[in-house]
Length: 301
Image 1 (tube, helix red, strand yellow):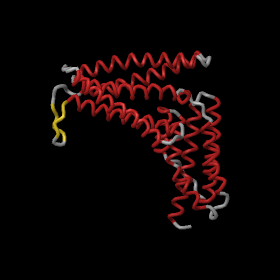
Image 2 (spheres, one colour):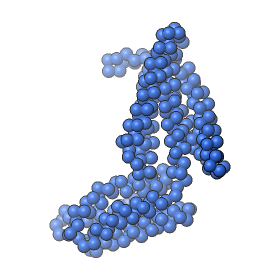
Image 3 (cartoon, rainbow, N blue to C red):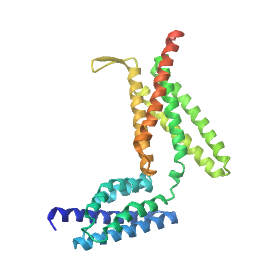
Image 4 (tube, rainbow, N blue to C red):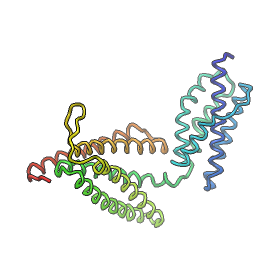
């Protein structure tokens, strides 16, 4: 066996051992008994895969420490499903490389099947509360992005005053968050689960308010009544604030869509562009309406 091949096989071996230790560490801190059993089951599979490669290399190796702790903290902060899925996505290429050893290493087909089917089924069976309420978070986030992007864009042209736009947006956003949360509560309560209704309303409202605050901050932080020269273009501070807000919207959509696509194993590009087109489309339309209102009614603030 040449040096390059041996190096790759050792990498496979260390990766499986790293995964084993990660699942075991997550299992030890998990309070939900079902999730604990699932994590231990996956850990046992990973340990079996480690020994599979150990028989091939004949070496006793150690896990990747940085990778182990990185995904461990990611799992603690963003949830075990997200952390595990993110790690598994990083390993897709590695598992694809297993295939080139079909016919060269005995029983590798079984290992590939475990990695691609059985483990994915086990991960999907993990019951995590935050993912159960992902629909409520999406509702709050999407509504805030679409409604407030349009509102801020329209007010920017109609009023041309950063502070008034910011506080108008804040009042509108907070009122809308209460409205959305109460609607989600009443809607979920119809299913007969009072506890779930309260949590759904909370997730919806909090997601909405956080989004609102992030979107109005540029109007409060960018100094008012100043003209900036950017790429030889003179841009008023309020329009710069709106541009930054649009950038914040794109980042929020990017971050949240990435989270959902990883945690729920969904198509990232499709969901991202769908949200971008809807949110920015409403913003452009509202911008035009705000401009027309300002011209027709001769508003000057």
